[in-house]
Length: 490
Image 1 (spheres, helix red, strand yellow):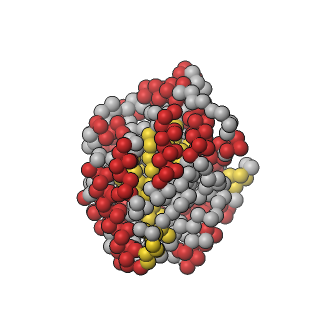
Image 2: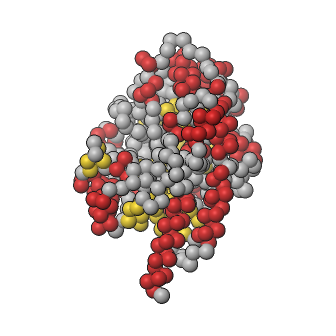
Image 3: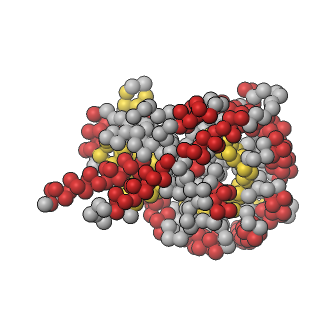
């Protein structure tokens, strides 16, 4: 099989070059390639989400987002947030390396669009609140949409000022809005929010939580009435709202939320947050999965979130923001749509190829005589392929496989095992801990030493399915595993 090329290398402007680079790659969803979209989604909704990497798990293999940090002011305090600390290698909400004016944001977005053909979405996620710092948010979107009219506009908000902005959001064709909703019971809110600033005064305690809750619900209802897609972000905080998020899900789904994204609390003491300094732990990976599984019946869940920085650039799971700092952006820029237009044409052709492969996988799995669901970790650089060396992986995509099919369930971050050709035992211990519950790792290549150590920890690692489609490799391993078991008990 030909060597596969990562999507991040698809810079050539020519369709032939892009097609050659994409050859053999694909996405990881059975819905990909369908002109009408998934069977459970109206065509007009699919049209809105098919190229949005946050609203479509399939799209995030192909399309990139960009956040511009133009809205630094915030009107609430969250116990999990501290925006004073920044490290270029750190990925968490509210973190930025440089704040921008709307005019600077325009220059930066055009520069990225000219160099990153995967770019499909422009978002404003702070580092404060996009609806509170509204003048800058509005000016930024108006400037950029005038130059790049086809780019999707997206904003994130805590919801406190959202009802006052809905009319303008609709007028500006912002058709994706993310609201962070961590509670629908104000008593629980008192444990999460020390204060809010509303109507020119600071509110604390139960009064603050009641106001925030009422405003969030009103904003969500108003967006739903206008046909604007909403994604609800909820931070899972063990012992505070982890059980309550079931009720949050029920309420927001009833009010028309399109997608629910439950994110693990990040509580490293080094970040200086209240939770971090008081020892509040985040959920374990299997705790997060257990909650998501409880909500999977009839709820659209976002499981591929990377909890991006407020200045993130690139595909989910990567951040190219340091390539486009303002000192590297030209003073005068002019948008050239050629690369983005060509890329979309090529991807539209490629997306259909994976549908047939996925259909074959479903048929093959249905014939496996088993009823056990297993978790599989995949080392991938993108494109829906098993195409990354184990030692180079900084995260693993997690799938669940059973005779019912292959389902993406999340990702696990891990420290890169191999640095400069050498692997550290302590690092491998961290990888093993991160892969709790996983039966096998599928990768493009792995050395004998880490393979043996993983095996001793009860995790198989194999490169037998290198460069296969992810689903094909997983189903092949699953069928082989159960064929071996059948022979043992025969």
